[in-house]
Length: 270
Image: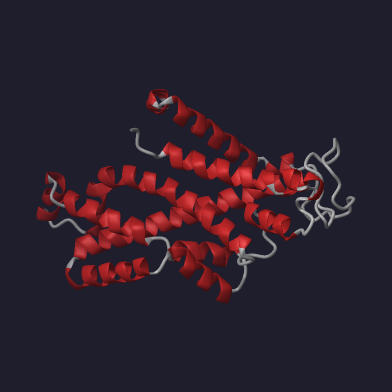
């Protein structure tokens, strides 16, 4: 704990601010059921009511409380990002280690497959998969994971190739160490890179889900930030009487705050 506090203290001020923002985001996500004043299934309120003491961000055209939908979006979007980020980062890392450890034909096949994936933009492939898969949150996560591991794999593979030449790894191999033994010897080198990639993959997962929802693809019943943005844009009178200020702007700012904070937190200092 003392080492963690010392590392945080060394961060530049803008990274400390980003870290604080992310802590608030995660706290809201964990406490979402308590913070939501109304159920997201409750559409008994007046339609398109402006912000008031009863409805802090007003209501949508169906009578849902927008503030409740926004808070629920913290829980769904952030947890989706954590799951997709963890799985895609782990998948890319494991495949990179398999590629480097076994080498030969296995390395050639994995490397060739990764290059094929890189030839087509990730978002296009994810959208194509999401269109034909059953529209639910699980398939959206699987689509993001399956088609976003490649960049992790490419960089991890290059890093692991250098790490395999280190003395402790060579010593482990000389003692006939198995797959798990070598992985343990490489853990100290891999974990910091894995952590950075995890943060970046969470960032990408949020952007992908929001984009899919914007195009009407993905889980139709999952009230994520992307779905809230899509619903706001679909409202024909969005810019009449400044409705966009309390309907569209809050979820857009929520997405931007999360994405920018994650990006700045792992950015290199100039």
